[in-house]
Amino acid sequence: MKLQIQTKPFVLFMILSMALQAPPLALCADPDPLQDFCIADLAKTSTPINGFPCKLASNVTASDFIFNGLAVEGNTTNPFGSNVTAANVLAFPGLNTLGVSMNRVDLAPGGLNPPHHHPRATELDIVVKGEVLIGFISSGNVYFSSVLREGQMFVIPRGMIHFQMNVGKEKGLVITTFNSQLPGAVVAPLALFAAKPAVPNEVLTKALQVDEGVVQLIKSKFAASS
Image 1 (cartoon, rainbow, N blue to C red):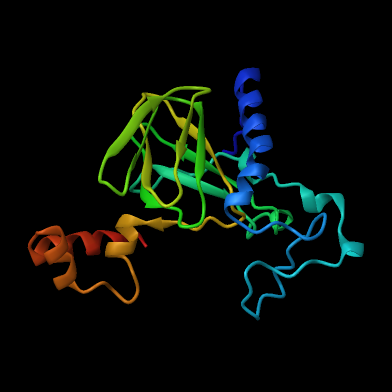
Image 2 (cartoon, helix red, strand yellow; image 1 turned 120 degrees about the horizontal axis):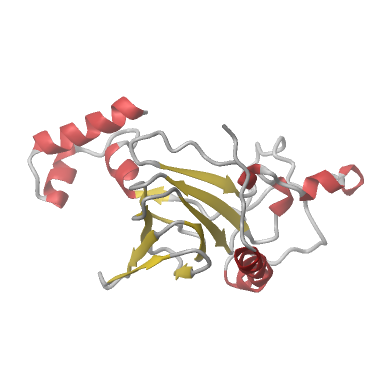
């Protein structure tokens, strides 16, 4: 069943404030645009470039500046108990060259958005619903975390490995914003155990200091869920 986001005025104000604060952050990530807008023409992507070609301005309509994807609750029926709905340039072409994007993170009780990092963006989280443990690990291997509730925010510096976990008894919802139109995501367990071609077992056994049987067991779990 599709559910609509219901927020209190304070939380809505916080989300709007995040959106308004995002453009200045873009100075630290994606390059500045050279025109008012550049709606991505995703059909013309055969030539690799840093961004996407623009749709002809004469073909742009108001609908190019609207995205409804974050209004729908994600399906959390999976091993992690979480779902990430992305509003990046690939889903919302109107973001092309603007240096901003957002995600909706739905978390079932006990659900985890597993450790990952965004190589191209700083992340700003706001908890819309529930009690969510958010944490990241610095390059000095220091772990920073806090349990956040409705309306509270947490910033994750660019490139830091981080996660969100629902520690409450009800569903959790987090809106994340980025100072990049395409922040990228490297999910640690998938990168290590579900990469194609596969990371050699001898690398993983040595790095994690476990037996090969453990590595094979974990790989089999990800293979079964893919």
